[in-house]
Length: 304
Image 1 (tube, one colour):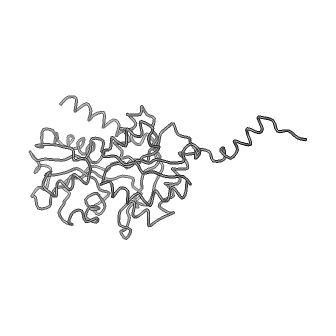
Image 2 (cartoon, helix red, strand yellow):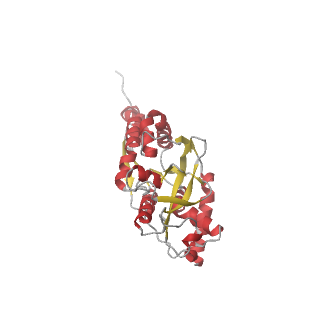
Image 3 (spheres, helix red, strand yellow):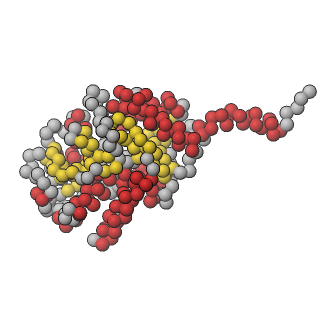
């Protein structure tokens, strides 16, 4: 009669668990999304990605939403979420908040091979405000303190161009989100707002037109920044490497695995030609200039 040693028996019992690897500890993967649009639209838009990831990974996926960028950043710092799609400035904030314990994985790539977008200032087309000079003494709404295109980049570049926002404009409030800023311009709460676009047919106010939130032709762009590095899908450093790579690979495969879902996720209009074609891998060095810019902004606020 053969006997199984205690060690061998323990190994046999553990074998099925080991086969599952990281999924035993993470049966639900939590992914954060920034507050660039209203909550219901974020849930609707991310539904195809959620379904793709659940099918590919074989785990539950929960979409984490917060009322501000900082809510997502702090959730990652507190280990409440495992991944987040962040803008460049939000990634820099998360890097600072976690003492460098986050890692950028992927960023979106456009059809022309570029991996960037632009900050823009918009006004009502019928306002007569057609340049930054016209905004002297007016109200310019920034989106969120942790927004790249909605605050950090426009503030930094406006100063470089000779317009110190706190001195040149009459008021520089935060609207809370990109959509809120654009809506505030349309309804007259703000004279101008900072937001983003990939190009002249795809951006925040163009999507709002598609969704029927504002009428076409109400909002016009009057200023554009230099190209901004697109923000990354970000993860925590304290997660299993196999988990990180599996999730990154699944996200990377989304555009080809579900083209219609991908188009809806990125443009909100499956019939529209999509300028964003997929993802490319990135590392931290790509975003160091954003961290440096945020440090400059903090220093300016301390001086003011």
